[in-house]
Image (tube, rainbow, N blue to C red; front, side, top):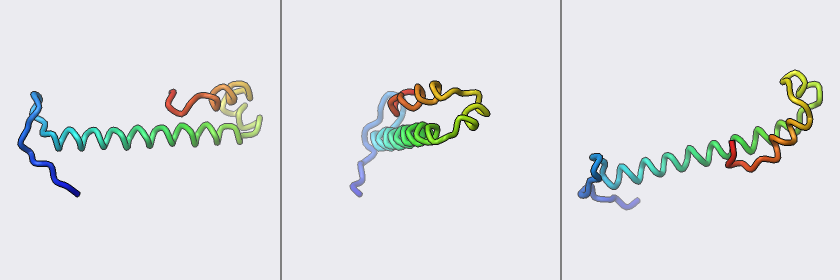
Amino acid sequence: MTRIPNVSRAGNGLTIADAIAALRSRLFETIHEWRRRARSRHDLMKLSDRDLWDLRLTRVDAQQEASKPFWEE
């Protein structure tokens, strides 16, 4: 891995390397969240009507939730 020299500081005191590390961390968190949403929406469609009823959801509710793109909350 290439090291980035800590010579430049942003106005908030962060080095370029710190800013890149923070951006990278945020990117991984975002991807993790997107995968979690996609997985849970997929799993929601596998539930029986009885399981959905226990969650106070209808099949239509489940289908509406599952049809959302992964980047939408």
